[in-house]
Image (cartoon, rainbow, N blue to C red):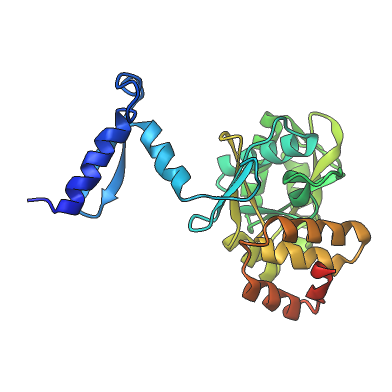
Length: 271
């Protein structure tokens, strides 16, 4: 026997699946999916209802709803009219890393550009969890299939890839990938060597762009403080832009912790 609350949930499900007061036929051509309604009950839902439930957990960041955030899932939803060259490079390389199962995080200036700061960048910075030499060779093979080349070294040569891994990546140095012969923006690829790198990967945010593309970015608090640490006018501008945009959703305790750890004056954000 189901409880009155469960009965109410089920009635609401049927009402929403059938389109509320609208056309009850519009949902039936979509492939049903299974999601949890209650710990003791699994029911079929139409994808339209699943989207409704997902949207209900989001908080709007911008007035036009182009940016929203689900804090519980650490996911940011971004709708933008067109993709910038930086977006295309970031999305394409992220797809390479996802295909080979390499954990990563995007850091530095591109994050502000992603969310609408009006400036360009020469590169998109990727910090990638430590991978073996063989896995790096496989990653390069996948990157080549995707249209990437290396600024230094022949990406089609396994010997060259192994030499780059030993001489650069294991020494905490970065390597640069170009997308379809585009010199800028390019990808700067580094392996995670520091505790801060590993923290950024473990606590990254997922960004879903135009309901189609997925990338992972640095935690906002760490990103803001890191840009303040760099200290150039452009970097401080990036930090203030992100702080103002996400002011209601960042953790001020976390922000203060990073300011203290990196010895940065967070009061610059309020000036």
